[in-house]
Length: 467
Image (cartoon, rainbow, N blue to C red):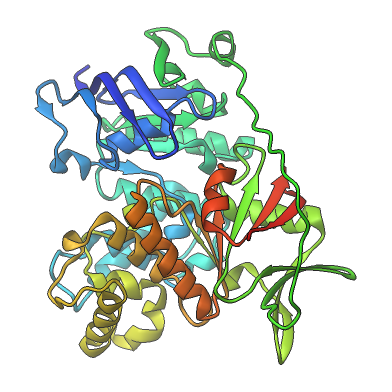
């Protein structure tokens, strides 16, 4: 087999202190590699290197035996992102073909008839018994996952990176995913599975690489990969204990969002405040949407929007979930206005499928003023990483959204960037949208949040007010 990508003696680190230290890995064309190790071992640094989100300090990255890592190769590397980047208010065929809009053309997103026919073929191939005209919001979690795979496969990737957080599946669903991936393997696609523990997908891996403390501890290639083989070399993941104290406090005159359980009411957000969310179980927040459902069920509570005229329970539709590195979820083939308007596309485009130029121009100007830029001809490529991340968050701030849960928006930022991000989030909060930040690091939340909700396996153990 031909080498697709090789990492040799890589040293790098991220803002959380995670490191790669003399790390080595090779992925061949058409190979399925299972990358496993405890939390903090550096697995996701590897995925960030391969998607171009992180640069290495030393060592070499080689593509196809001779070339350095390039933009052309990075466009063929796809990370199966959180299904939150699907646009719920749009149809299945619209979501699939968002990636196919010709660059630089704003008016028509795609030829509708061809898009519907091609979507019907792809859905049938995946075994999804849904109409291309069905709204994404009506799909099950598993169907949404399959739709994300369809969208990726339609872009003809060379390397697909899959994280364990998307594969908390039943036995039947796991078998379906295996069948789909093995069919694509025959087309030459390579897959990198990243996990903290052995999952059913290990059974289709050609190679397993065990990580520990940022190093490639052991690589198994050209032999049968089994859970027993991996577990015999895998250290037990380290659990993280949090020792804190504190009591909740509230000002009834300022309460805007509450947790309510029977007669017990806790203030969790007021305008202008950022609330932290941490769970001592390392993997608890990996898929925040399903986590929040468990959080409400286990604590027997509801989120209450406590406005002067009512006290209505919030549904998941009233909240938005913003994944880590949201800037990587923007669609590079669309402009600034197109990316920002996607959540509102059906309301704005009408019967024609066209977003009026006046609305696009107004929204572009509004966003640029928000990030203190003036040039109306700026494209997505002209924005910095921080500005792209703010765009990714800002597009969720529509009038019908009351709370936003953001997975660690300060990742990869210097102090100046972190301060500006806090300013932006505080400004959004002042306008009446509750801002929650999840992180695995209590010290981060202490620095940027007003209050911190502390949980253990979804159960609230404390609410700590910050000075």
